Image 1 (cartoon, rainbow, N blue to C red):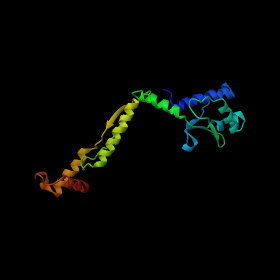
Image 2 (cartoon, rainbow, N blue to C red):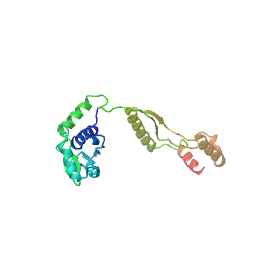
Image 3 (cartoon, rainbow, N blue to C red):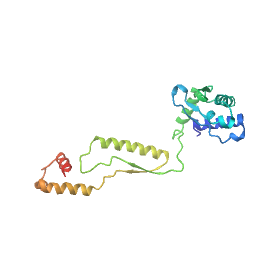
Image 4 (cartoon, rainbow, N blue to C red):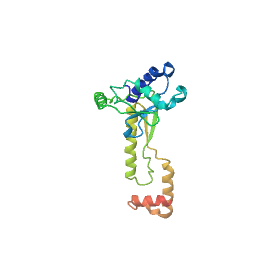
Length: 203
């Protein structure tokens, strides 16, 4: 499915050719989302870039472009603003049609990427020598959401929870306990997890 911005670019390219000739067939129409909703949904900034090659006022260029545009099924009548910006506001019927097409497609008319890439999503990566907390759960959920979005787009996603060099961490903790709390390693229930976290900090 051709996106709205791609469709607008095609329409503007056709208008550029009709207004100024085949030499402008490959000109980037510079159609982008509007910087402010009060200006509409999209804007075309190409008129300013054509002032030198056409040796004309940008507003006059924008007027010529509009006169050759065919956007009746997509947008309300285009408006020229400032030095030559062309502002576009999508029609409600057009938006309704696009939403109906999306609802009728199991992928919501979102194409898969081509080519796909190998993506690595690093989750919470907790320090397993310390207590876990709700922050680890939060970042893991966010990471999984990102991974699902990337997979939906068609990427090959590797989920990763890096726990670091846990051998070193526990070695430090055991060595410290042997020095300051030797009975902890042989006495059941001598310490709780909170104690170990504090000892780990000290170690």
